[in-house]
Length: 626
Ligand code: PRX
Image (cartoon, rainbow, N blue to C red; front, side):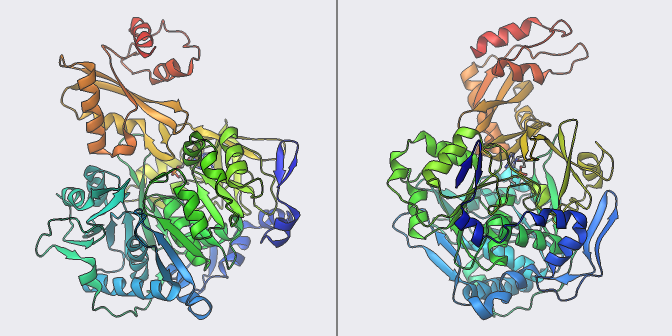
């Protein structure tokens, strides 16, 4: 890369070969964004072309109206002429001794069809919701595409979520089938996923549980309900016609945390999502025929949906998936995988970068990582130090870094510098993707019509929440992102962070409200407050303040609260610290002042405390924290 002041630009060599290397694209797209996206959409295979690009009925909108498409036809069938024997998916298991599995496009096509046929035999119809609670194994790809093949709606639940979290999602979507596994490897240990799945389907509509044998650990199979994956697909034909889907038919529902209470199901549809997934990846990751693309995100998150699975396959490149933890059995496991499979484009989260940074540089300098040509970052702001480490130690000062901003709601990336153009400015994400219009209202990032084809169409079965969360702050025509952001003189955007009670813990999205509800279920806790505290590696971590009705010691209470959170949500949400307090700072009307608790960690001025009902508690808590 070329450095000019505090900005970086791609080398001439990179620029020359990039899909996008002329700034004019922004102007052209801005002139008529709908036409721009329509032109892009023509590159995909449609059963029937749409008759209108964009229709807006605020707060609702549609893209590629009356078009008919199937995303799997575009991700699989379309490549069979040219790329039949090319690897579509490389899967690297966690145990070193196990061999990687490789699926060519044709093999993946056949597996997806078999599974799709099996689903049909189980009575699955278009529009039915299918729960997928699978770890990072090839079957998660097959299951998702299998659903999409026949028009079933996949609802993927992150495998490290608790059975309670699974339960909520299955109840909300009324899924009749769950796909899960006997277990998976995590730091060399077998995690029994089936046990969680059994718990999670209680009091749901799930009638059949399909179980992938991954680890071979002993699991209980309930007769008449549980079926082994292998046995299910064994005799199925490897041909299954892709179902013609309306552009606006549901492709998937993916749950994410939002302010207050239960997670919400973001609704994504077939046409727009496919177009955005295809083109954002092609241009932002500059995908070329020989690329091996590794997006490290678990398919349980939107980054995994779009950039581990759909985007690379839509583009006909090879995607890589790794089962385990990044630093197992040694810190250079990821570096080894990059070299072993000749990864050329690598996409991960700042948290992972900071974790590796902590290991020093020796382990990474052992590896030349010569195949890498482009790096990406996602999920949280990347601080300058992490950016520089990534740039020097991983990209060896050669690879452009695309810092991509987006959300579960947006379906695909909406803001980033394009790799063939730059400029790249550490801690700034870049410009809106061509055709995307944003604005900054009172420091809040908003998206203007026509938005983007992949933006969510609703909150599953909850139109009120859809309206309230996204379309009330600035009216029904402006999408509210809940992120604070600003632009520099050149128009590059810096996203500061959430303005609601969402915190990003190791890139994972959780709300303090959700945590508080989980903790409040503990029988001894009368009141609690959770705030995010800055963390060197994870970005942010949750800190809990609790009031107990018992005389249990603070150690015991802390342990129980953590167990409670793990049970209700999952280990990713575990509070870093739990403080047992006598009271919480409150206004005279009884409102808990979380803002003050937050400031206790940042060292900011606490402001006027005299309006509190109990100002003395602030001093007490302050001393505790010290
Ligand atoms: O706050 C922003 C942050 O992650 C939020 C979305 O989280 P989630 O739905 O889990 O999706 C994450 C992966 C797309 C955003 O509201 N965020 C995401 N990417 C960035 C970011 N913050 C700063 N810079 C980014 N590149």
